Amino acid sequence: MPFFTPVLRSEALKVLTLRSLCGTLAAVFAVTAAFSALAGVSDTSDPDFDPLFTALSGAVPGQIAAIAFGAVAVSSEYQGNGIRVSLAAVPRRGRWFAAKLAAVAVPTFAVGLLSALAALLAARAGLGGAADGLTVGEQVRGVVGCGLYFTLMALFAAGLTALFRSGVVTLSVLIPFILVVSFVIGDAAGGAVEFLPDRAGQVVLHQRYDGTPGPWTGLAVTALWTAAALLAGTWRLRRRDA
Image (tube, rainbow, N blue to C red; front, side, top):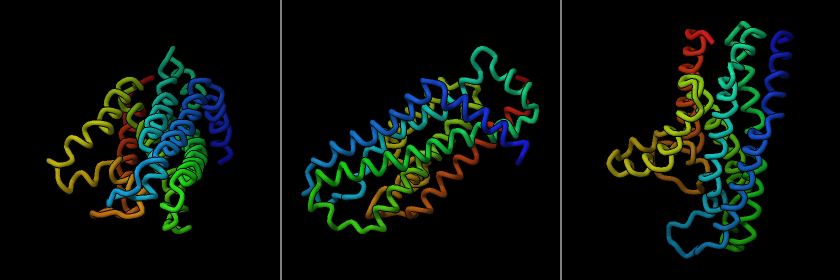
């Protein structure tokens, strides 16, 4: 741990002093809260109306900013051969990558919690009595689950960026997949779509849910996708010279 702390401090400073990354974190908060506030004035007469998901629906566009944060945090190392300097300072590549991931995960989780809480409060103000059926436990689960979901998606993007060695490629693959492919193949894939990383993780944002994964098992599925991406990224980092 004494050997890890300086590396973690260094990576945290990199992440938190880059304006683009701080701006991306701010976008997570702004987009999530704003879209949820707009959803709070929506029609609540729909029989499929889910007050918890309506209140936290800003997480759907907000996750794009979280994904961008994870991708840019890693891809910035590949600009101007910065990765060579980082690995010269920390030859143990696994230690360096672990510190980078921690520097991504901690602020994402913190901002994710604040974003979800702001979104919930803003949307509830608009929903009024339509949200009275939400229990404290459901709201806590939604807020904490949203923070965890943002964190997992940011780490998922970070792992893919280390694998592809490019943030542009990661965003070009991941964002269309989440926004388009996940919905397009939904009907054709049947129950399998429930185990896609975004669909599974977003179950935690719903008050009512159908299908195989529940709120926490859905997050576990997303965590498995994230772990696979991180393992692939670690493998590429270890095998390829900087």
